[in-house]
Length: 182
Image 1: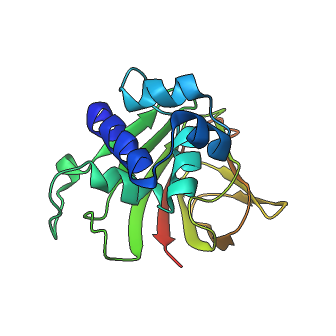
Image 2 (image 1 turned 180 degrees about the vertical axis):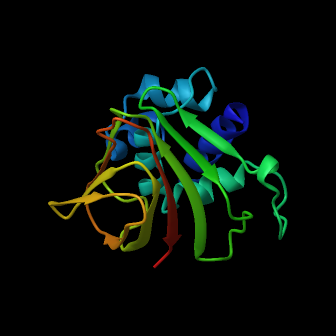
């Protein structure tokens, strides 16, 4: 998957006619990091992918679905793509069958106890998110407001600026994330 993702990132940059330097200026990511991600020498973090999605006008699920197999109306649990950001302790499962033409998607997120992920911008401004905690506790900060969610709690928001997801623990947090494009 990292190889296909790297190739897709290089393809998107070429489609926009940007050099690595221009993309670095737009994202705040170093040229060397971008180059290594495009060559699949490193697996991009969630934060890095979020920045790239922002400049390309895609959600993370849309980007990841572009490097997965042909869309199907049904995806069995064992076949749902899982992506892991080992640096932050974030595991993301794409539950919805991928389909670029639809606005909604369902994602399962898992954050390890102590994990803290900050996104400096939404991948698509105005993105609607429903965050339903299934297990553990989750702190979500959006629009300078911090929300503390426990099992069964659901937060709905539109993402316009920076967000932060934290799992203070003591157990991992597991949550369903419904993403609806503007």
